[in-house]
Figure 1 (cartoon, rainbow, N blue to C red):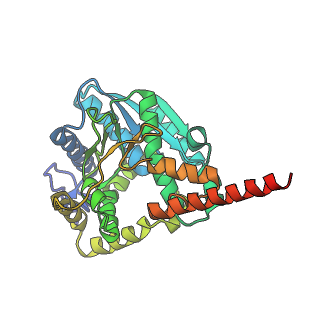
Figure 2: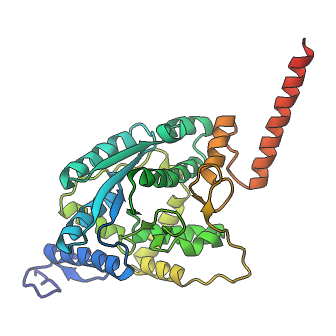
Figure 3: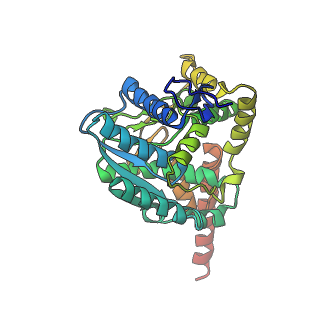
Length: 342
């Protein structure tokens, strides 16, 4: 027997929402999903009329849905935003080169200007080369650090007022779990912020309009809206630490569907004692981009790659300093030997 739509629209339901358990028809689900994102934008005051907003586009489901919904809401509610697409090419053969074709499709579908920046262009390295240098361990550390800074670099080049990223509720809950397991108090509270950075601090703000949107619902929305997106997993991702947090979260969700929102709200309510030392976010003295250490992590990792010490930025700072000191000592000894040969 058909189940009527819970919104009393007169149509039959076709789904039960993973987030709320409501039975909805397709049209009511679309409206509920879009309205929740609109309410998040309004309540959190993510944008102001006339701003130029870069949507971080990877071609995946999250960024594709974000681009579609932002384009739709901008017109429906007259936000007055100038929307553009910003993509980062990490240089991963068989993955990013294919997903950028989807981003180009988004550009054509929504009429948004697109800017693509590559690791090769910014750092002189591709992820394929980096993995060949360091192996399959810790490669996500390099990619994550470089990608975050690459978005800042791209945003500055495009002269945007803020960057909208496709982080969804599952992503944020996973990050909370990861930071708890790592004991990372500095990032534990900050990872739940829906807006980070500010023009006053000379950093381009980042916002997460999909913060309260479940991944399952994003997939359903993209599927039934017939949006074109790239769904292949990164070839280097199976070894990522995040995968363990994701598997744990999915197990929790099976038992308690509200676990995702529970974890996010718990993270939002965390209070860190004043006696706990917290890093101060500033600007890197080398590259001029946001950082909580000197030099920034991106500069340290890049220096390690260029010096032939790819593990320089992995682990404790003292370990990296010892590696640099040892290399400099070896170079001095080598130079001394060469000098004595003549």
